Image (cartoon, rainbow over all chains, first blue to last red):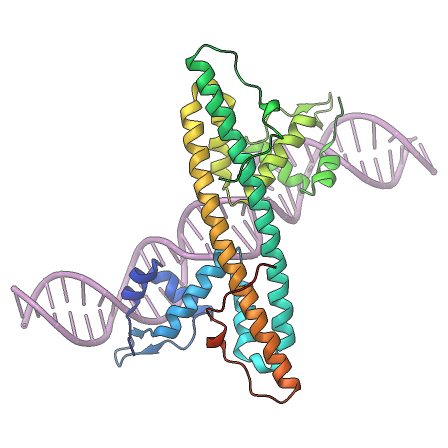
Amino acid sequence: MPQYTVGEISEKLEIPTSTLRYYEDIGILPNVKRTTSSQRVYEECHVSRLKTILCFKCAGFSISQLQAFFMLENAEKDNIDAILDLLDTHKTSIKNQMVQLEEVYIQLVRKIHYYTDMKKAFVQHESLPKWNDYKHKPVKNE
Amino acid sequence: MPQYTVGEISEKLEIPTSTLRYYEDIGILPNVKRTTSSQRVYEECHVSRLKTILCFKCAGFSISQLQAFFMLENAEKDNIDAILDLLDTHKTSIKNQMVQLEEVYIQLVRKIHYYTDMKKAFVQHESLPKWNDYKHKPVKNE
DNA sequence: TTACCACTTCAAGTATACTTGAAGTCAAGA
DNA sequence: TCTTGACTTCAAGTATACTTGAAGTGGTAA
């Protein structure tokens, strides 16, 4: 079974060592063993937990939401309903985020079209485009 | 041309009045006129700007990124290349976010399947499912 | 006229999520 | 043996994005 030091995990997952210690302190990265000289020893389960943390964080989960989730999972047999509730809430919130991101993306593409055309118009001394003509223009999937 | 007070805008867009003043202070919501008794008067352009702010914020833009963007847009004719650069960077970052969110979503759906099956197994006194069987299971689009 | 309410400014406070600093321990290589 | 580098703890500091509090103003309704 492979084992890692803080430094190795830090490099592997691009997380500062201070953050790794912080995650342990606040309880979302538990059961880190120690050497006789009290240096941390990480194993596969910690890598996997950290990946979960990163993944959920990128979905906008707060530290306290992570704490809540892992605490329930810890005693999963007693908390199936609560876990399902929580997962469903998060699922809904992520679906909403995805819809919103799609919207932002479309707006960005519209803006890029607008400024690209403006640049062309400048170069060719033509009349400048109007944002109003782009504001609601449908955008192809890129 | 419709006009609004802070309170009205606050209610309309669900943004605290303190936040509206804050956005004005830091310069991302400029040109708010005042009554003779120095009360703020908002117009359509402010509503539109605030919607842009909300939209970009939900895509994870920081205040300083918004400041940078609006500052460039303010003098768009001199900054077309910089604006296009910035828009393209943001477009890429949003595409990445969308990919990551999709991943999180799939993981959540897997977890939901797992815990749903676990619940069934409990009720029917069957053997419990193993997370390893769900970990990489393809998930239908829901 | 008096009370109330929404507004004003400005400084200070708060929550979240780390990050940094100081002081010390330990194992390995020159 | 000495030094270096990676580790340790714990408290305090930082950045971001607001939020709150105190003290005051202006217009309207009873």
